Image (cartoon, rainbow, N blue to C red; front, side):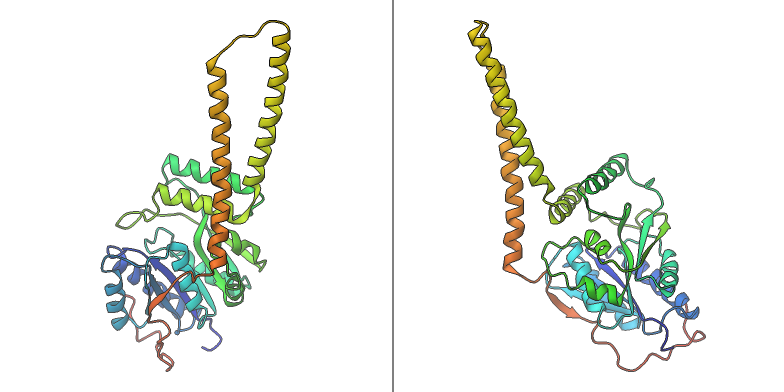
Length: 334
């Protein structure tokens, strides 16, 4: 028993009361199966992280933890965002776990892949990425923008795992290494491939959401993509600088052309070209200022060194010190 890894499944939650009960049941059943097959320890658990929900999510987590010994809860003092909520769960889970799996509460990611994750861990892999086999369940717009995002990141030299979100397994040593990264603007999908530990991929088909609404509307997805780009590369600033040089060069050429035309007596006045030039150059300047401001804003956040999350209630660390004596014959799966 002592040789079996302690697995913690971290599930960030934000207003997930509609799906919580079904999610807890399905994941508990999965833990039972893995325990029966001697793949994980009976000390394994589910850690639900409430990211400042406004509904009954935390009440349901607390109630379930009283009747289900595998369910633990972590309540953040305020909404810190999905990535910070996930990081909070990973940080707390690292105290007692041999490996940690992260998955969203809507269970669109196929939980049947969890078994393969654990098997890959036993084979010696420290990081196992869950990768979508296709994006057929996405709308055309979401599929196109996602592909465009990965293309841009590759061009900027940022190595991401295409079609991978936050469904992954990490060993304790990989997790400990990740937690050494203390920056405020933490882009997990970009940092984890940099850790360098043995890794592999597990393909799966993404399902439709059980209930409720997506917590990642277009606005949040665009902000997330922009954070990923600016957190890992200064290429956008260099691109704008290059664009500025090109604009200056073009203006010099146009000036020479205008001077020659004047000497030849072919000058003509026109507001259109003037206004377009002003608007074009003004737009470039505003973009450049905004982009530089974005980087300055990130520096501003980093130098303050504020905590990325605040924990209000921690049910995970209040673990029973006695070893759970649960045998395959005396626990159900229903």
